[in-house]
Length: 338
Ligand code: TXA
Ligand code: MG
Image 1 (cartoon, rainbow, N blue to C red):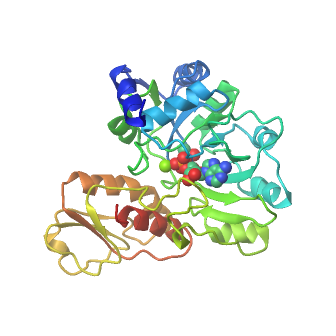
Image 2 (cartoon, protein in one colour; image 1 turned 90 degrees about the vertical axis):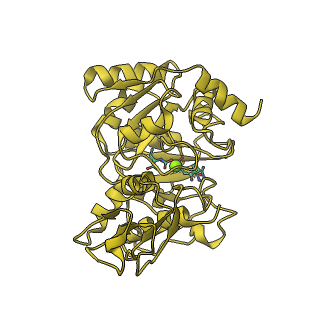
């Protein structure tokens, strides 16, 4: 059966997607569903993840079907604590230093899989490496502890859509296609985790994200090696980093110094570019120019401006340091031709 056919079948099964509250009963229900092999969306401090038991190929297949995601894309295995994560992979000195410095938190480490590692082949897309993350969100930690197995989770959006930072975004993309959504309110960081590969003695940045490059370089005491996805977008080192991954329907125009007729405006730092008074809609990522606030608002504001139906979204310049690197990475992907 084709991938599309499989996905349509899943949606015809017509899950009545349960909305679970952020309390003990909600967590227990979510954990039970995950242990039974169902897909459950849950909050992390970065974005909502679409979780499934990482040890079960059948469960992981459910993620691919719900998201209509290309099968070659490996998934992050989420663990409740550092010790559990370190049993799943082989950590060299640098990976250990990064785990100690940033876990729990918005960092994913790609390391060689451990001989006794439990993440199944499908979750790793057949690779000998495994992507591991210990999220800091208290609900995620309680859920993962209750499941007692690593939980594979990509962002809980349809493939090609921007990542969800609220339960309502998840429902908009996946209602009727997954068993449940654990609602923890809006996520704090708003951007996916930073991904660092520690595979060959040289830590490499595969994806900028919630931990700024500068903080990682400070912890390592050395600059991070490249593999910036922009260098060859069609041969990404993190296989999921296809350039047009984050895709609103509206045409995006970056570094905009003016707003053209018919465009909605995504602003930063309280600026008022020429023509903004005629914008179809306008939102400022952070009127005070705070990059953490801008990161937290980014995906929600992209969705909101896209939903106005404007033909285009003009995006004001965002500085390229700190979390700005990850914000600009996501904006460039959203703007890429597709
Ligand atoms: O913040 C996040 O990272 C969120 C939350 C839910 O944890 N997850 C997330 O997952 O963004 P996803 O699937 O959208 O992105 C995971 C990225 C993909 O680009 C994938 O290719 C890469 O991680 N990845 C996973 N395993 C890998 C591996 N063994 N080697 C290289 N890249 C890998
Ligand atoms: Mg994603």
